[in-house]
Image 1 (tube, rainbow, N blue to C red):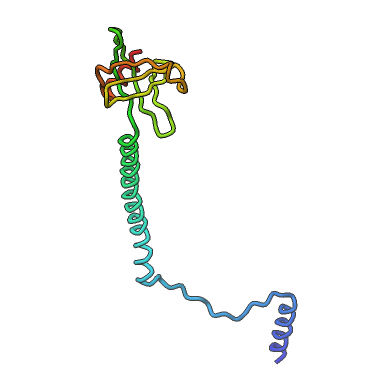
Image 2 (image 1 turned 180 degrees about the horizontal axis):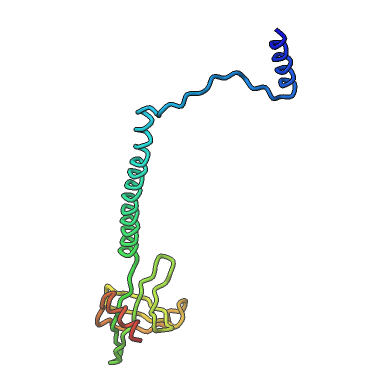
Length: 155
């Protein structure tokens, strides 16, 4: 009995000092269940599926960006190479139609163009506000975007 009392006193002292060790049964280490193994094995497969789906989205994004650029290139006006003449003097200039709110431009001239391309006429004005400063030119030829780029590159 005295042995039993000593154990109780020792237990009280340890409890007061915060060093109580509970009487726990030893834990038995078990091998993981088959269900856990399938989850662990499927995790890399899920990562591969996610990588594949994200790589599939990238080409779609590239195609969308390419489509938007093509649409912009199709909608916006492109420069033209125009050949115009007045009193036997023939000249070539790169002409850009402009955008809404932006006036047309002749890239190699300080004059302001007022086009009447449907009538093959081009008015070049020194002052935009005064129509008396405009000269009328006859358009002989209109070339496309590639010709305009060549002309800009060579000049």
